[in-house]
Length: 283
Image 1 (cartoon, one colour):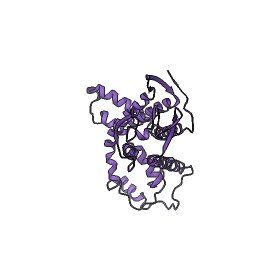
Image 2 (cartoon, helix red, strand yellow):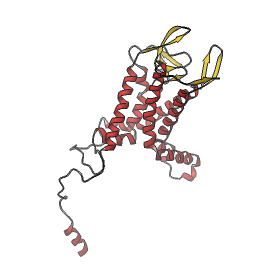
Image 3 (cartoon, one colour):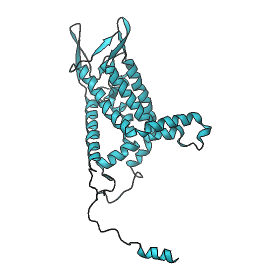
Image 4 (cartoon, helix red, strand yellow):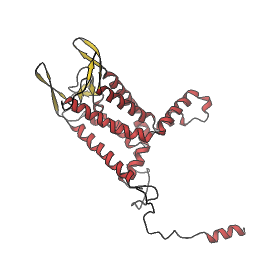
């Protein structure tokens, strides 16, 4: 009892008199600043690409043929996959819908991956620090006087992350299909094996998207997160182990897939309008 009383008497009753917002001497601001620039650049580019309705022209037998910039046979931009807009080429058309003049198909195609990323556990940490400064870094005070967490709207919508994951997993399969189709070229003489720079661009895009999607924290929980005995569920345990390995590099998958999908879209745009040449060979 004497020891306890002594401890209570020597315990400080007030916080340390430190006026500085933090005592860190490293570049703690670099990570949130980089996130602000890269993520902001992606949002700006993605918005511009989604609303771009411009036509490009290719010359077939000396005649200019108009088509949408998001398709450079056999490459389809990941921003517009699956292709459901009116005017999509027949060999990639999933379900033609005459909505192009009033609503870009990219707006409702991108809602799944954007919703998935916006509610992602890693991205929450990234943009909370970069945009809301809540807090900007560890051991750095935030400017907000009140914190309610994710218990109120709009942050309450973060709980939809798992449902966005289901849609993104399906979209990842579609992008994988697009990567496979990019090795197939069709013309009047039939089907031909095709290999080009754009084919590898789309393959890398599919790999990065799948790595990010299946390395998600929610995917770990879906595979085996609620099991009490792994030994009784060996298959689900194997899946959980694989997902956990992907999850270890979740940050790298997240940024690599974000940057690459924009580069893939830009590459197809530049090939489609003739700015750059896609080196390929048809067998």
